[in-house]
Image (tube, rainbow, N blue to C red; front, side, top):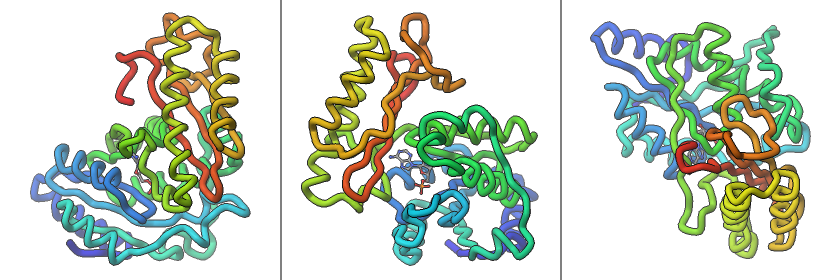
Length: 287
Ligand code: AMP
């Protein structure tokens, strides 16, 4: 597996594959790879003859005081994992390849980005929309794979690809979890052993919340109880616990007649901010 660092080199490789009639899948990441990232590569592999992974810790999606500087970076280890997973090419650009002097363009997806993590992390999804628009335009891939763990991010990316007529098909990948239900995340390494014991409680609270909603409890009371439960088991701050439609992200008061209902939560534990989401009804998609 080769590593390229310029858009020109990336396009040269992708163009040659496409001329040869091969389909290309793109899997954008910020590195610090774990099994879930490799599952995106595997899904890309199933959809295309060639898989390109990207590693770029995008400065524009981190807010002041967030973990941009300390975000784990180990390209050597990541490249070895990607090669083993059957990835064909790694695109790992330096910041000035992505944001050259004079860069001035913003990408904002209105509405979808005002709620959930968008409310808790102002500007975050503008940075995500900006970098993902660039990666999709740089790679000319047939399909791009993003994880359902970041469900709101996936919704934002689907919308921008549609709105901006980006031809790449956007594909969601199911959430990969640890044995206790904790969604895999590069940021889980911030957890101390004691915090790691508590962290599985986030998924457990969402599973119970979904059950309460299916049993007919109103969203207001059920989400308040779930937030209380999170604080009781040791989460320091609960940013949100909410019930929303998975496609529009509109808030729901009841899940009756709402087959796409999902529950979403974000909570802080020590240095880590953990997020998770699951469907409420079995037909609503993978948990
Ligand atoms: P990141 O490196 O955290 O930006 O994540 C890169 C991609 O991997 C994003 O599309 C994430 O949604 C996806 N991803 C991260 N963790 C998981 C997980 N536990 N299950 C599924 N996808 C994930």
